[in-house]
Image 1 (tube, one colour):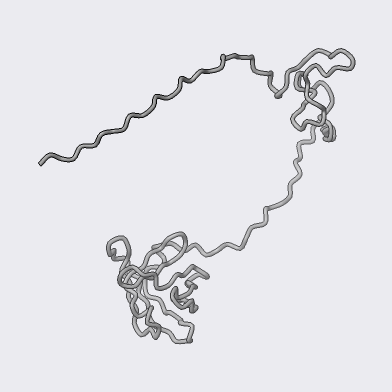
Image 2: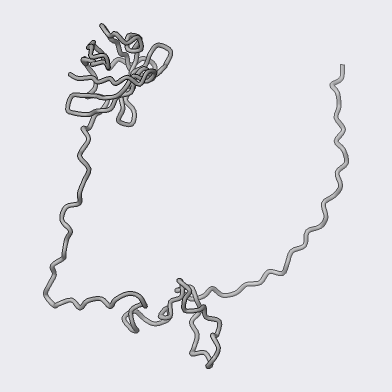
Length: 193
C-alpha cells in the first residue's frame, strides 16, 4: 500500500521589494546637540528650544568654564586644609530576622497546634529523593499526622505529606522557634525546641 500523497498548491510569487536610498550623517558631538557659532539674530541655527530637558547650552565649553547649569546652585567653596566629611550616622536597619539554615532546623521539635495541644515532629538529615525524612507523633491534626518529608527553601521550612502535598509552612521567628500555619486549614502552628 502506498502512502497518500499531498500536492502542495501553487502559491503566487511575492512582489519585488525595493529599498530607499541609504544615507549617512556624522554623529552629533557629546551632549546630544550640535554646537554652533552664534546664530544670526532672529534665527535658532537648528538648536533645540531652551525648555528642552536635554538641551545643554554649555555642552561645547570645557569643564570649569562657564556658569553652573540653570536651576542648580553653584558649589560652595572648600576651605583649604579642611578634609572633614559630614555624615548622616549609621543607616537605620530593619530588625534582624533570625538566620535559619537547613542544618540548624534538623532535629526534634515540639509542635504547638492551634488547639493548644502539643506533639513531636522530627526533621531528619536522611535524604528521601529530593527531600529529607520527617515524622510526627501524638499530633491531633490529621495533616500533621501524615508528615513524611521536609525541605528548606527561601528561608522557610516545608512539611510534606506522602505524595508531595505541602502540609505546613514555617519560618524562623526566634532563636529556637519556627512559626507558620497548616496549609489546608490555615491553622497556626509553631515548632519549639
